[in-house]
Length: 66
Image (cartoon, rainbow, N blue to C red; front, side, top):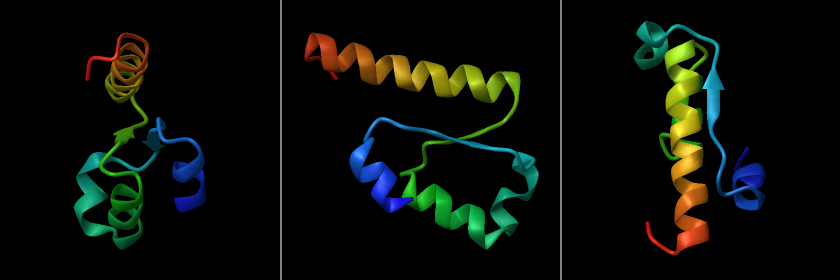
């Protein structure tokens, strides 16, 4: 996953596990760290948040404004 994020710096992780279990799963904590907290639940709301994050990165890369 580290190689993926090095190649594709603007990526997100859609996690299929319910958010309630995230704090209790070591593998999810590792993924969150590798993804620099760009982890979202696989729900409509999570997908919307992920898309907003990606759109924000796209906008900042095309306008030069972060």
